[in-house]
Image (tube, rainbow, N blue to C red; front, side, top):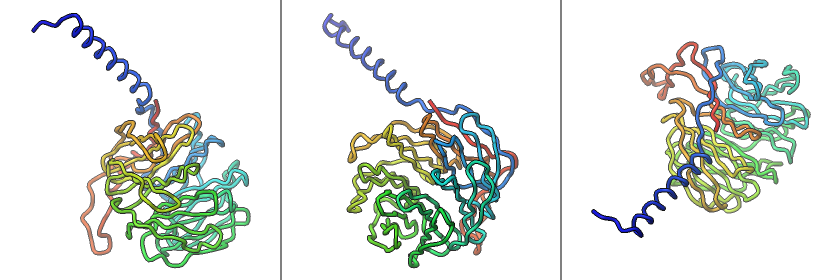
Length: 347
């Protein structure tokens, strides 16, 4: 088949344009594994939290919180959090950190500089998610076993408020830093809105078609809540009305989502397929998938360093899942000895 000059030029221009576009997209995305940071010990893990200003990474691991230097990746200390340590929250202006643990339910307070333990306060059973709210100066825990929220005054370490029994499995929570706390009720497929002072329930919103709402973060400037759904979606919710603006498909088994307002990027880690899903907020009502990067099966929790844009993903090699029992109908697969590490993902 012959091509005239005009058609040939048109085809050549299209090929060149496509190549330039592909190069530009690769430059904009391109997350990949930079290195692995091994961490000693063979127990399970949960949340990861980055203190970008203090250059520290907090990794929950079995009964302790492992502290890494964000710049070098070196382990700089370990803090005993208690049986089944879950996560950490940072109150930088107070020089304090807070660790949630199911022992059966406590928050350990530690010094951010020395990592020395300053005290321990009893909260509800099985506190899972934990956050610090700058407006109220409070630490909030989602007490999964007691089906409630607990508020702690960060400066004194005293419990100052608890919510009513919420009747289901509490999961991740977020603050709008304007007087409200939001909480996912995973077993009820709902999103709750609370008064941050009284912990009075202000609104209950269904999350369907988002099933099993888990991880959560916010774009506070535009009042948008991002929910990672274990059914395999990322849902965007209006924080004022509870309306689901949009949802995008992703992998299953999500347990962490973080939004970086400086880049308008949202990161979600999904453990069932072992992937880091990166979305972009094109407008407060429009979102696009930038890329899906392979991590490792079981890599469900992560944290973002807002200074470098690197993403830190906790994971270990897993053995065969045990058979379900009446006492444990959904057992987790065992961690293989010597395989726990943090994946450092970057451009």
